[in-house]
Figure 1 (cartoon, rainbow, N blue to C red):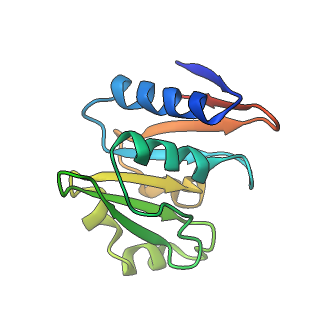
Figure 2 (spheres, rainbow, N blue to C red):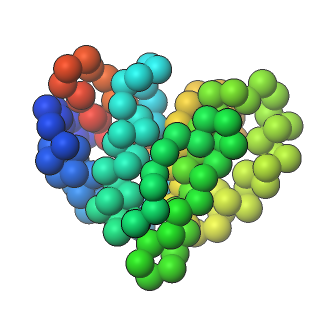
Length: 135
């Protein structure tokens, strides 16, 4: 398990690079952390490493954002914070995204834990001034 302390943006980029290198074939990543821990900030760093030029922001109200890599691959960014029932997750076509073979980044996965695929990579983010990223 990697444990990386991130004090500045460059550290987040290095952690994102290490995450992608450590799990080169994985496509589903679940990000755990309290409100304001830096889940979206870390996902922005990962998207930067993947070459995403789109504006990366929390999909809080829309539940899902889609970004594109330079090669045209999709990156799906979910925020399940507002999910009240699992039926809502199925209504957005969750399985189509998760099993698409594209990158899927899930914020607040604990709210849909029973739907996570077995090969999901779990990433924890904690800390205040310094973020600690563990995977």
